[in-house]
Length: 330
Image (cartoon, rainbow, N blue to C red; front, side):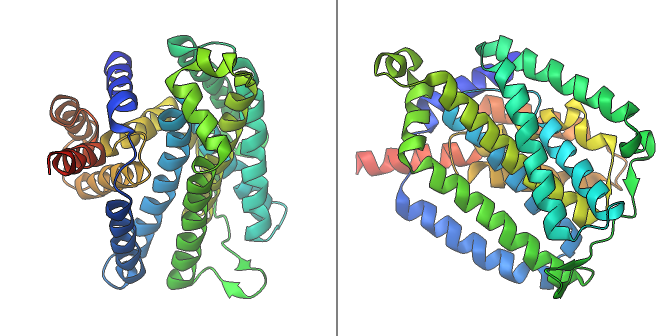
């Protein structure tokens, strides 16, 4: 998977990250917003909230891979670590949900700072392997740490009352809260990428030596991007812990890191909408096949193979490339 991922990522970074048509992107955003507002009246809200949490997780990962050019195999650390921090704070310490979510996000950022400090000293596959190794160390810590309750995980996490006003036990209430938080997280990523900081990240991705020659502290920018990505991945994990009312070892395994890579590549790295589409596809596929008896991993593997062969830029990346190609010919 590593070689296919690297090849696909390299192609997407070179060819698919050209600025898409703003009109097309805003049309997609508008349609998506309308669909999400109406969706809980037609689709099971818990499924939708899982999709939203993983969409934010994939967008956070895309901030690092798609716009900074760093392939991390350890993002489950931030997603699952934040879930544990939030679940423990809310259940054991009795914190309100908003405080627990902030703690999870802050804890993930701290983990990102520590992991990034060691990882950014290397590039390419060495960077990826260091993040994987550190992530596995955190996994074994979670197996042994008393507060995680080992293989049982933290269960029965109360959703609580948001700001002492909004009861999150009502399905519609918690759905729209999750929707607002996820949209704010995605907007924060969009704002970061369209700031001077985001332009420098793109410069580092395209030509790191040139960025160094221009006087930029590349290591500092990489570390900052890593911490931001970790914090936003932690926000997704904290939301998931509140929605499903548990945190388990599944959230910190290397398979979870692989899953978010798959989501991002399927949708199209270097695009804002791509990771959302990829996350929706994978979560929807898992939900559909859960009771069918057909192995989900085989299905996702087959889809990944098709994407590598047919959609080398990812689904959204291919759409952008073809639309832009027609525009150029016209």
